[in-house]
Image (cartoon, rainbow, N blue to C red):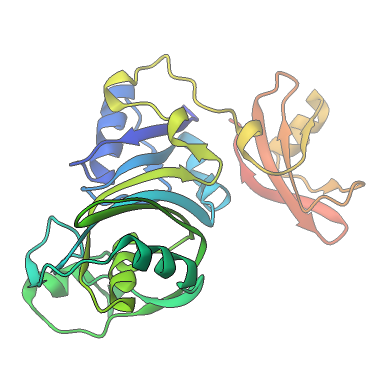
Length: 280
């Protein structure tokens, strides 16, 4: 079964939990997701099944949109309210300060990843070091904030929306926003509202998922030319034969005469060669 499944992950589940539930519900063995959400986070989680698991690199967008809520005056070891409070002074920013902060915060910067994360250092995941209390130098990555919008401010909390590059940690962004004002900020809620072209309003809750779910078609989500081939050319493709490239495609999705995804080819000099076989 080859499918793209857009799940609205609920709070309290790991991304792996979701994969396991879907695998059992739909009786699918080959399945994976395209981008982890922390247990306390909710929102868009894209799953791929069958031969579509080969498409992870093509469907993982560099842009993700989130809405986050922040508590001011508190800092935890995990950078969210599921963690242990390590600093607290109850100081808060005014709405005017936050407006200025959001206007002036750099749109590209080196972000230190959270200690409680799955990033590997010397072969071990950071959360393993954190749980043992071992000190380790935290890696930094360049991240991009495509937009940063303040949505709401109350006494000691605020909510914002942002679109970020792949690999950006919203927990770390919140910590860094606080540092700019010499204040402690900690995430209380996170919703991923978009991952590339996949939107939260198009996602389905796990409880509503069953074998009738169709999901988006490959033609609708892959940003590349599409060609329907005849039976002879279908046979060539099934045999992995190189093809002529009269239109100069970089990549192209071939469909069978019945419009079933067959394969993705990529440019190889003046020809096209097999990149990913999707048909039987």
